[in-house]
Length: 350
Image 1 (cartoon, helix red, strand yellow):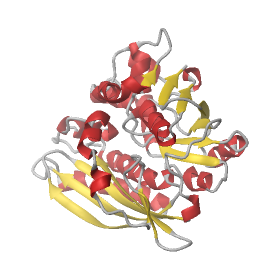
Image 2 (tube, one colour):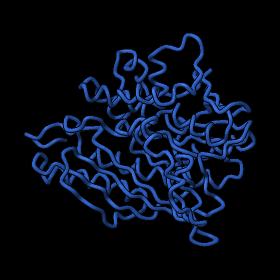
Image 3 (cartoon, one colour):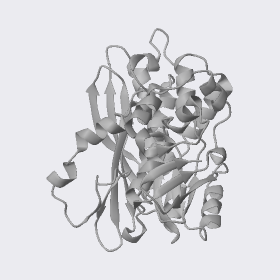
Image 4 (spheres, helix red, strand yellow):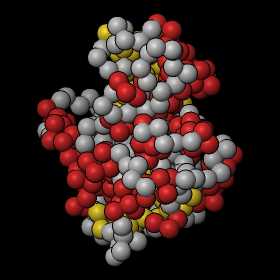
């Protein structure tokens, strides 16, 4: 809960969670040519070339280091929950590469003249609780006095070099599996306007603080060809990254995409983030929509997810085992949402 007399955390930021991400089109312009300008050592197995979830650096024949960072402004007002969500989201990128986390560092920027040390401490405690659940320490970090509250982690992990799973390995004929239901951006928009009830808030916290632990076990399966997580660019944006990485068409079956309870109605009522529109502006030219697809459906397709689910591209033979791994880790909502097809680099919604 917020401390009496202090402002709501979400009132201090212009955006929240992964909705704070720079729009994909703008980011592409900023990073244009970066890979060509930098030295690429042979040990760097994954860099920035396909907008993957983390960097991967090979240490030896048995180990590669997974390195990532993620931080953002508050998506909720409760400081402890904010810390939990931010930490879960950051660690997710290690799982999305097939790795297991080993270490974290805290990234903290806070308006110290506005928020009490008690509130800031609760944010850090929330992050620490998630790191304990992941079995890793917060081994250090960096703090600054900042106009808007910012919290996140550097997360490090290990993976066998042969089990690194990129967002660029999808193959024609693969099935697509989504590990978590969508709708976090819609729920956050409703929360910011004080229109989200207690049950909706509970659903939002439950999904955003669930660690994507199936990642390492999924990467160990031979039939899993590509892996990523769905975050700020929405399901459409991250599915399109799979298509671009493979040079193939990704088809989404809209009626099979799972949503958190109540999200569709909230979206229809207008609780949509500005990031949805920015996402569409950034990549909509590469997305084909079916006739009759509404503006609300498009907003859900591009809804920014904070600490969203894993998106898996796997062979049909591996599909039963992939779904079983999700269930074993408690992800009963995991669903087959589409497939990968021969064709131009494009996302097709049907």
